[in-house]
Image 1 (tube, chains in turn cyan, purple):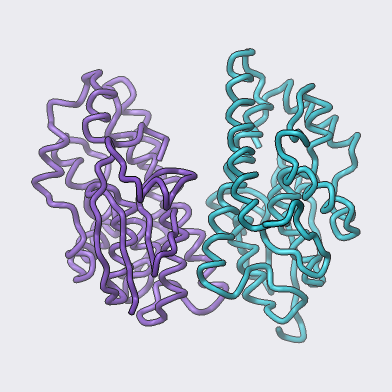
Image 2 (tube, one colour; image 1 turned 180 degrees about the vertical axis):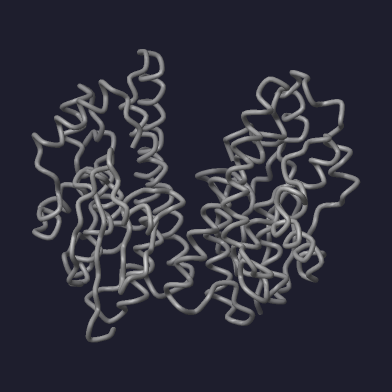
Length: 229
Length: 234
């Protein structure tokens, strides 16, 4: 890209969506500035860059804003193609498969978010069942990608699905602490579990994972007050 | 020899999106109409995760989810692109396609299935979404510029079927007075040759959304007859 490439990421420290973008930028070795937004008091700049959704993440590249995490990931991959790895495969059919499962993992995240709404017990149980069912389907689907027992996680070969998996499931221990139920069961989902465990060991992932206690406090607060993500 | 098949359903705007894209690119394909009350074994085999239409089959390989299919079509057949080449413009198009798909369509869909008590609130939400879209369109002929692109394609429901259904049900959500630019867009959109070939028959649409429906609580039986998703669940 140009000599004066300025990349700014507007984010929030606990947002799964922001983590996806942070990870993509770090994986590709793209230098960027980070602006922490107070979502209860959104900056004028954020509202200017994302007037429609008024949400984080927003990536600002040389003054031009890009919104929506998956849109941003594709943008990053297309704009810096020779920087580090390609986040998406080259073949159109393989790209379609990755996009399909990235969208599915997004749906899984939405199921998980329901667990933090302070509803009555029945709704909680229903939300849990829905999440387990989605994880089961995801586990089966990912077996197609990884014919061997566990995914070959390598820092040189990370892609969109690795990013989606670790951003969505990487904080499972904090979630379990708050909910008192397993959100990622190694017996039900051995492939997903070993994949996540391998990912969270990587230095690039450790850099972006929020501090455990801080995240637990936030999740407890959200659960008690029913704040929507 | 390219073999392209599309598993679809006549009223689904998601299937129309795929068909319009195939027509824009001049791709020959076989269309297979699914009976959603009795889904074919092929559909269940090709889309085991969602068991839904549309599914595109290209040389035996299945692709599901309309937005994923649109990107696949654009990347596989490079003529008449439906997405801009520039990464930033492409990102904008994807953002707006998502907005139409995830925010506009559900809001409009809800107005169709509203009881009289729910209608005003659902209409207000739909109006808000259409206003954002009208602003985005601005002075452009199409969202894609001079020719239709992904955003226009994904908005096919707004362009055609919604106006037809709305008229049949005597709703007043999308009017020329309220949204002059979007209305003009719709008129231009339905007159595009690839679009004209794909639209569901107007009389069949009207026959399936009888004016007597408004206010009745026959939602579930009606939906099951037409095999349509419930409001908010597509």
